Image: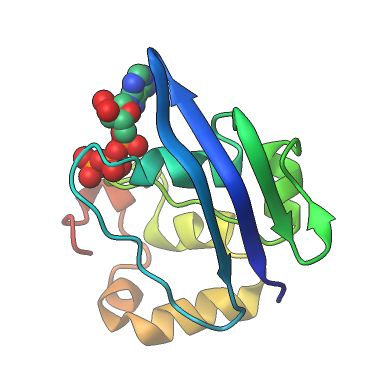
Length: 134
Ligand SMILES: Nc1ncnc2c1ncn2[C@@H]1O[C@H](COP(=O)(O)OP(=O)(O)OP(=O)(O)O)[C@@H](O)[C@H]1O
Ligand SMILES: [Mg+2]
C-alpha cells in the first residue's frame, strides 16, 4: 500500500473555489477521519482526490505516481476507492453479488462477511432490503 499525498489542492464548484490550497499525507495502514461542518468542502475534497470532479489547482499522488489527471478507473486500479455517502448498493443484486462487485478478491469478500456477521446471514437477500446500517 502506498501513501496518498495531496498538495495545494483547490477545487471549484459553481461560483468559485470551495476548498483552497489543501494539503495532507496519509500514511498506509492508518484510518483517518476528515471532520468539518456542513458545506465545509469535505465531499468536494474527496471527489477531487478520487477523480469524480477535476481539481482547479494542486496535485494528488499515490506513492510516487501523480494521479491528478488520471481517470477514476485508473485511480481505482492504483487502489484508490471512493464510497459515496448514502445507501449506495445495487438494490436488485444480492448482498453477496454487491460484495463481489466491489471487492478485489474472493478472500476480501470472506473477510468482510467475517467482520459483519449480519451480512453473512443476509448474503442471498436483495441488497434493497437491507436497513441503512446493514
Ligand atoms: N454540485 C455542486 N454544485 C455547486 N456547488 C456545490 C455542489 N456541491 C456542493 N457545492 C457547494 O460546495 C461547498 C462544499 O460542499 P461539500 O458538499 O463539499 O461540503 P461537505 O463538507 O461535504 O458538506 P456536508 O457535511 O453537508 O456533506 C458548499 O458551499 C456547497 O454548497
Ligand atoms: Mg459531504
